[in-house]
Length: 446
Ligand SMILES: *Cc1c(COP(=O)(O)O)cnc(C)c1O
Ligand SMILES: [Zn+2]
Image 1: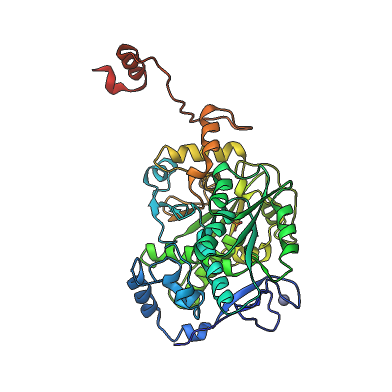
Image 2: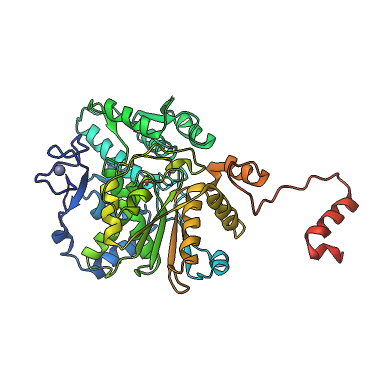
C-alpha cells in the first residue's frame, strides 16, 4: 500500500508541499503548516488490522519498527527510507500507575506517562527523531541544508544535539543565557553542537533563529516545523495502546510553546479517524502562573492570542511568553472540551515533592501538571472514578538544583511543606540510634 504525507496549511489554504522541501509556514497566509495524511488510504486497512500491526511491532528488533515512534511509520512519514531513520528507540515509555499518589488525592485510577525516561531525558526525542531523519534523507537527496538549528528552553537543544550527532549532521543551538538547567546546558555541549548562549529569553532566541534560518542551508528544528509534531503525536497513541486501546477520561500536560498539546490531539484525532477510538479524552493544558499567555487567552474564551514577557519560573522549560503553536492548541482544546489552568511556584514545588514521596522523581514542569490536577480534583471537576493521565515531560534528574533548593528551603516564593534535609551526625552509634528513634518507631524497640 502506498501511503502519502505532505505539508499543508493548518488554516486550510490551498496547495501542498513536499515533506522534503525547506518550508516552515504557509506561503499564502504565513500560518503554520501541518503534515497531512491521506486518511482514505489509511482507512483501507481496518482498525483491527492497524491494532494488530502496531501491537506486533512493539519492541521488535526489526529496524526501525521497535521505536515507539517508528512502529507507526505509515502514520508518520510513510515514504522515508528505513536506512535514513535516525532513531534511539525513543517512545515506549512507562505508563506509571501512580497508585499511592492517586489514593492520597482520591483519584485511584491515576497514571503518569514518564516521557522523560528517554535517550535525552525528555519527550522532545519523539519529535526530533522524525525531524532529523527527514533532514538526513533531504541531505542524501542533495538538498541545500548543511546544518540544523533551534532555539530552546533546554530540552529541544539536548534532543537536537543528540540526534544530529548520531546522524553526523552539524547542529547549532540558541539558549537563553542562565535560563536553562546545568544538565540541559551540558547536554548539547557534550554532543558537539555549536552552543550559543544569548542575553535574552526563549522568545528572543526564537526571533533570532527564525531570521537565521531564512537561509536554506540552516534548517529550523523548532516545533513551528510541523515535522516535530508528527513524532510527538505518538504519545497519545501510545497511551491508548497501553490501556489496551481504551481512551482515558483526562490527559493533563504542561505547556509552553504549545507544540506538544497540538501533537497529542493530532495523534488522538488520527485514531478517531481510523475508527480505532470513538471518544476523546478531555485535555488540560497546565501553565506556570509566571508564564501564562494561554491561560490569559483562555480566560477570555480564546477571543485573541495573548503574548506576554514571561517571568522567571522554576518550570524553566515552559517559560515562554509568545507561543508559536497557539492556533493548533486552541483547536485541540476546543475539540476536546479542554481546560487551561495555572500553578504558582509554591504549588508546583510542593506538588513535585509530594509526588516524589510516592516514588516519582518529578521535574518542575510535570509538577505544574500535578498541581493543576490537584486543583481540578479539589474543584470536583475530576471525579473519583475518572481515569486520569498526567504527562511527565522530562526526567527530574535534569533539575537537581530545583530539588536541592526545595529540600534546603531556599526556593523563591516557595514554602517547602515536605522538605527532607539530611541529618548530619557524628559517627557515633548511640547518637545515630537516638536520632533514628526520633524519626522511626521501628528503631525505638531496638
Ligand atoms: C518543551 C517542554 C514542555 C512544553 O512543550 P511545548 O510543546 O513547548 O508546549 C514541557 N515540559 C518540558 C520538560 C519541555 O521540555
Ligand atoms: Zn495558509
